[in-house]
Structures are given as C-alpha cells and as structure tokens.
Image 1 (spheres, rainbow, N blue to C red):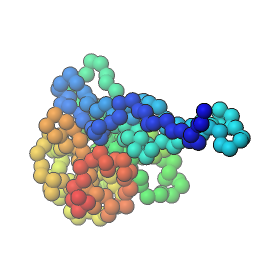
Image 2: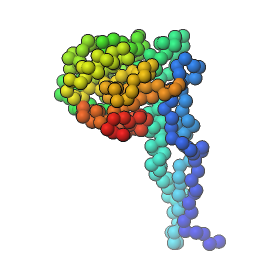
Image 3: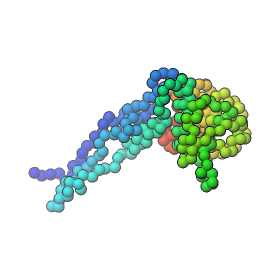
Image 4: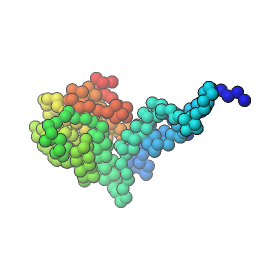
Length: 261
C-alpha cells in the first residue's frame, strides 16, 4: 500500500468559543452572582480539548519510532489569550460566603474588584527599602465598603502585603499607592485632584450606585453599574500620565474612556 508522506490530524476542540468572555456581575441583590460565558469558564479550567497533533510516518527507507512520529504542535495564540482572560475573570470574582447581608456582599464583591484590579497594575520601581514594606491602600475621607474592606487586608499585590489606612486629604497621600474614593467624597476629591500633580497613585472610585457622567469622573479607574452588572472604566490617558502600567488583559475587560478611546 502506498502511504502519503505526511498525515495531519484535523483540529479537534471541545466546544470552541463563539463569543469573547464576559465580565459580568449581576445585581448583588439577586441569587445569581456571576455570568461568564462557556468559553471563559473552559479557558479558566483549561478544558480546551485535544491538542493539535501531527503524524509523521516513514520518510524514505528509514523508519522513525512511534514516539518520534507524533509531534505536538504549539497551541494557537487565541487559546492562550482566552485562557489568560478566563484566569483574569476568575481572579476578579470572589468566592461566596454564607450568612451575608446584601450590603456586606456588595462591599465584599467590590473590595475583591479593587484587589484584583490592583494585581494587574505595575508601579514604577521603588527604592529597595520601600519594596519590602506593605503596599498602602488609602481610604479617602471615609470607607465606602464598610467592614468588607478588611477581607482584602494582608493580601499580596506586586509581592507586598496590602495595608489599609484612612486619609483626610490628598496632601496626606504621599505613602499611598492605591486610593479608594467613595461616592460621598467625589466632590471633595474632584476639587483636590485638579490641583494635585501627576504621580503613580492608583485612584479607584466606586460609582456603582451613583450616576455621574464620564467626563466628570476624576479617578483613573471607576467601578460602574450597567443595568444589573458591575464593570469598570479606565481613563487610559490619565493613567499614562501618572507612570502606572496596566496589563493589556485588564484593559480588554474595561471600558476605555478619556483620550484613550
């Protein structure tokens, strides 16, 4: 029998994705807490099915062994991208806890967003003595998440444990690396930030329950609600002026506003 010199196994994947992954957090007052499409779940779990394989039988008179004949091909780039996005989605969504009030649950979900967003941000390199100190997350004038903010204290961000403090004005924020601004403090923050110089301070505002037009949102990142879902906006132009670097995978999940649109 005359064999072809080269055989290829056709691509075989289980449930190939038809759409991109969703970043969706339904209204925390409901019973369902997260909606991810099938492709994002599979990517996070590593369930993409069979690898590409290539069969190389005998060439000329010299036969290769079965082990040499079967060569795995590299995974296509889209698989790596979906897997990375799925992992990011899984990181952004916190595990559920029992016996929580709706307010506690909302605060814990948003605190987890803050933590995991920060993990995809890079600050300019600091002096060696500062690199071993905790990374300071400052609450601007008040605590918008209540006791839920304590669920992320001590978590690791950029290799450093997260420490939480309270400041009364931007003049006290020199040691802060992350600044969390609640809806009640937005007016004060807007006034102060107009006079503040650009520096690598990751400002995150919670506007999930407040309707404030995008041009008047002074923070670099804003948590927002779209119908029943929570997402976030990034003012990329402002972020670049501060010297902060944001992962491209984080940017894919955000709505880009400002000059970066």
